[in-house]
Image (tube, rainbow, N blue to C red; front, top):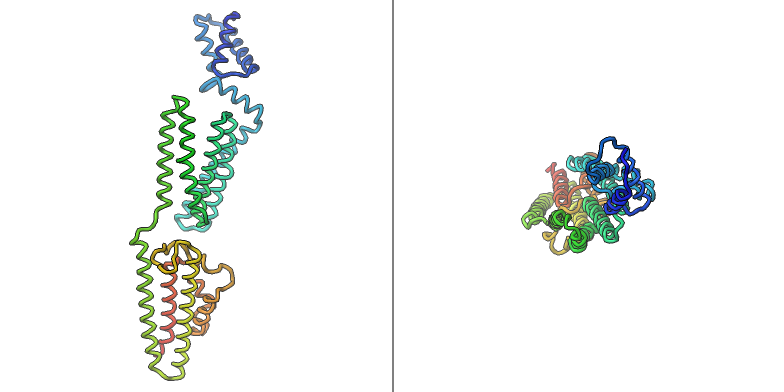
Amino acid sequence: MYQISSEQIDYMLQQITLQGISDEGLRDSILDHVCCLIENRQEPIDDFEQCFQGYLKQFYQKNLKEIEVEAHLLINFKHYYQMKKFMLLSGIAGAGILGISNLFKFMHWPGASFLILIGILLLSMVFIPLLFFIKLKENPLGTQRRLLSLGTLLAIAFCFSVLFKIMHWPYANMLGNICVFGTILVFVPMYLVNSFKTKDQQTNALITVILIVASAGMLYSLMATRLSNSLQETPWMVLQQNEKSSQQFKAYSSQIFGSDSSENSQQKVAQFKLLSKHTEALKNYLFQSIVKTNENYQVEVLKNCNPNDLVTSVLLPSDQSQVKALEEFEQSLNQIYGNKDKDVKWAKNVLFGMRNSDVFVVINDIEKEAILHLMKDK
């Protein structure tokens, strides 16, 4: 059995302190364990310092300081490991659900929006706060606490900006702007100042900053991307051509109806005029609703808007109630068809959920089909 001298004990105590163990009780405990290992050694010791360092390395993976951190967490944070496990599970579940929701979104399967909502809420309201709380316990320094707090707020804001953008909710762009400018103007400088205090972290910090700035720039470019002028003008040109064709067809139909003075023809003329009146009223209602709903639409110039931003499900009520313009339009159609070929609410079923770049074309087509039905006996 090897006998340890008092000088060797002082040396070991000094080395344990230099390696980051400040707690006296923990320091004495580590010293006692190392002394027991050395004293129970059967082989002779040629180099005591090398032997001591060899036994000391058995207590840690990276550095001796992590023992004190673990002990502090176990004493003051009893549910640390359970919370860490729950954090990992919530992160895996959130990422997995988001991956599945993207597949549902791509395939246009039902439930995609619900899965996106659940996945983002798991990440933003469970995973990120738990990660912040755990890292806060592991990093007691004030500067690191502030950096973690800011990073957590920006990460949650980013998750909600993506959710709001996907769900077409208001304030999505505002949250995205806060994330981008908050990251570049506030978080990145704080991160650089904190990281450059240690020379070993300077290269990793620069690489991380480059990735953050590049990602934020690409995200902002994606948010600010608008359709090209040619794509924006194409729906407008289609609407113009369709409206012109519809007006020409109605003028031709009016001439045909006017050439016959029979009682049956006069009745069809009245139905034709009523249908034309209600068609124009419905198109005007939808157009005004688009203007009020989307700030990108201008009353004077429709071509300056993005016609694919809204769908008629936003403009038409989803319950059993009917807007007056739509109800009158359907009533005029039912008079023409005699409630035989079409259901009472068939027009709304056709229009509901369509993109508003197509809805005006479809209304004109429905009107044209009804006029042809009136003209089939001529």
